[in-house]
Image (tube, rainbow, N blue to C red; front, side, top):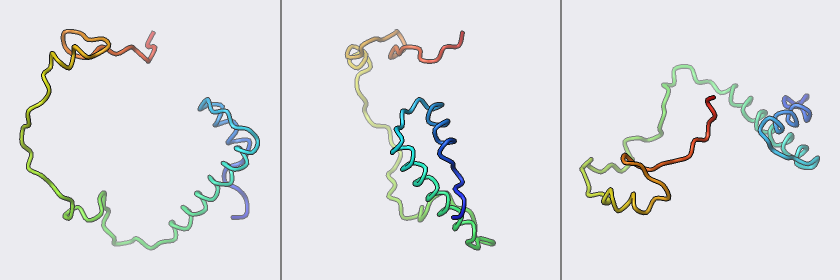
Length: 100
């Protein structure tokens, strides 16, 4: 690859946006790794795939499947008694997104 697709300064900016603290060595290493990945992906663009049907799973027919049958579960009250916080309908979890 002649020119890096991902520049060091761009990675620094992205790391700040992601609240990652990368030192100079980590920035250099990560920039090289990401550019290596992008270079590999660009070689995949050259693969002839015309006429090849799209798949989401490889060899799906070989996956072991079990019948979908109802199984006994844990007692609801016993589980909620073990929770740090519970409501009448289930587990109580703290809000983590400020919508205000």
